[in-house]
Image (cartoon, rainbow, N blue to C red; front, side):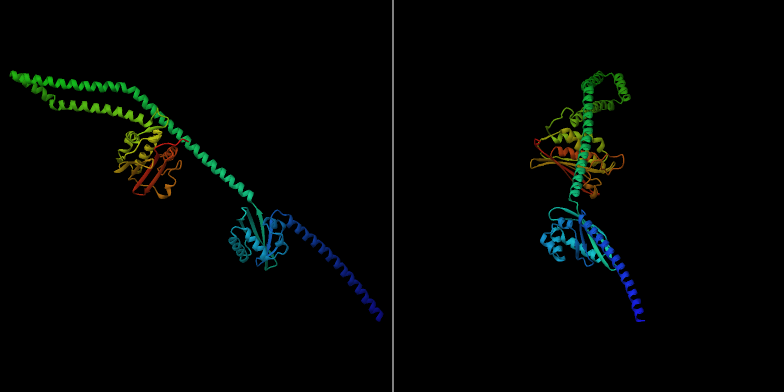
Length: 445
């Protein structure tokens, strides 16, 4: 009986041992696979191009890879005997704004489910990109995985590309301005050629008319003396019938009015001829068709000729007041400055509006080898948000079809070409003042 029990127990023990051996074999295989997997994960962690830093749920460092050590310049002695405090202190010493970096880690510690993507600058000038992802272990233990990547080269390339874009924009803007100035110069040349042609074609006939009007005035004066003499002779001879006939004829012809009106007509005709000659000369002076080089110019004459050219544009909206100072001649491109003056006057007129009772004041003066010309108006003014944009090409506050937005841009370019500057002050509802500064002497570039 005892032997049978021992035999049964022995058989059960052998079966149990066999099961344990099988379980041990399975566990050993599982441990081997786990070791292989951990080794693979470790190799992957060490071979990745990114620096990896692992934090526990209290934001303490628990693991890092070799690339992180290299990227953050961690000394060997810190690696050999590292702990959270020493490694974190070194990490903060590498980051320019380490306070913000520490605050970010604290935020992530209190918001364990959050993901974030940041960049930070190192003290040596490098730019590091950091991704942060939560990694759960169980239901409560949440680790934080930080991956670091050096993006300095990419940032430098992006900055270089951005600089190139800005340079291209500036170049395109300069080309547009040069193109617009060329078009405007061609227009000015056309005006000048037209004025020169008009002057050539009409100066001779105007001269004839002017001379003939002068001679006609002399003839009329002589005729009046003759008729006066006839009347005196008839009166002295007592020819009553002749005197009556003369009286009737004078009354029918409205002699007194006719005599005065003939004089007035001759005077007005002469003034009209002088006005035509002045308009043609003003057009020539305004465009300076034959002057393409730097010359010494009286700016007051340029302003006056420009006023005569744009008089019809201004006279219905504003009174023009000239307060000229004592200024020297200026070395400049006269036709281009006249174009600037025209833009200022036309803009001032438009700001006041047709039918307005506005006022445009033109002042001049000199200071420190510079001459200034000021145009102020009583127009509607410029909004503060537009003051920094008024010199941009194609920017305009005028209604569609009323302006191209090139006038002030071209003016800015012309004054810049003269090594000068334009100042502007404006108040909405009260008016605007433009002051143009131009050197008396131009420096050789």
